[in-house]
Image (cartoon, rainbow, N blue to C red; front, side, top):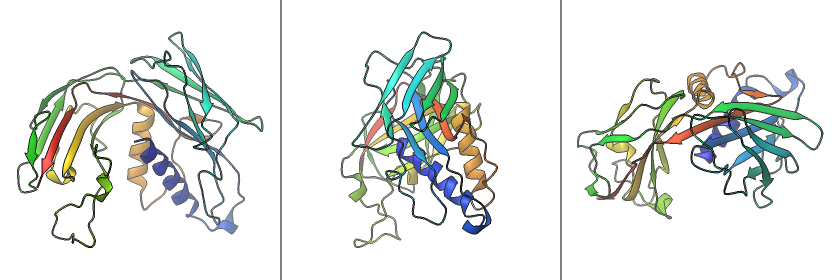
Amino acid sequence: MKNILLILIITALTAAGCEESASSFSYERQIVVTGLIEAGRTVDTLKLVYTGEVDKPFSPSAYAITNAVVRIVGTDVAFSDSLVHDPANPGRYYSTDPSKVILPTKSYRLEVQTPDGKTVSAFTTVPDTFSMVYSSLKDKDTVRYDIKNDVNIFAWSPSRLHGTYLPTVWSTDVDAALIPKSFRRDTIDTPKPDKLGYRVGLPKEQTYTELPWIFLSYFGTTKIDVYAVDENYASFLNQFVAGQGGELREIRYNIQGGIGVFGARTKAAGGITVYLKP
């Protein structure tokens, strides 16, 4: 999910920049933040990069911010964690203290100071805990993959302090990208596997979803989880999806002194794991 978030941000920025020719405006470098903190876990990844010029190739590693001072501070809970830069993954910052666990329903502020003296801040509140309460697929079952079957239904108890729910489907197999689907447009020579399936844009109050079999696109071990995501991330997703192919320059970010997304999520207890067979 973290990689998907970074791709979404970069895609949005690229699309916005392409609305005008490179000669029609002056380039102003900005700091891009991409990060989701998760209830019950330490801060795994927060990415910092600079924007690139529209008429030049963009590489996240080339534009990575590598010597920033990055802190996560609780605003209604005693919490302070200084994140460490990962030299093997330029621009990534993460927690090295296993005791610094993010708590549900609590609020946190991101504080960044870059090597050139720029400051960035952002604020988020973590959604409350919740649980899966029904699934038409049974956990740890072996299931025959059949796109002609009925849809799969999943339901969960309500969370609080969230912006939307994000059901996710993903394969836990290491070689998942090599596993072809058996759809008619696929061939042995050119399989079209999907690495990840998402359902986004659910109404805030909706506590169920119906996933067609096409979302369960792998043979092998498949995991179905539901996340409650905060208003920051939900707002960005809604703006990005609505703006595809149109105007993205007015997208609203929750970052002070930069652009991007700093959000929070909570995973529902009781996720489903099934083994799919042809």
